[in-house]
Image (cartoon, rainbow, N blue to C red):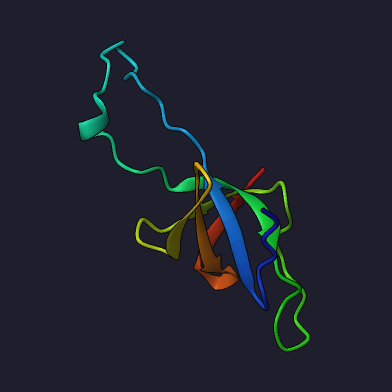
Length: 90
């Protein structure tokens, strides 16, 4: 399926979190929080003649409850407005 966000929306795939702590303790799935870091899969063209700051392939940080979650086939994504992204990881 090909999905193209509109206006200033961005499609993000969450990146996996660490399964163990620094001391080697394994964290069970039920105790893990959803990661707030993801990779931009697709970005819209922008809104009101303002070009997008992020592009496909960028790794970004976002707020815990930002955007809307959606499932396409077996993959889970988040679609959010560009202004909900907190930072680009370089």
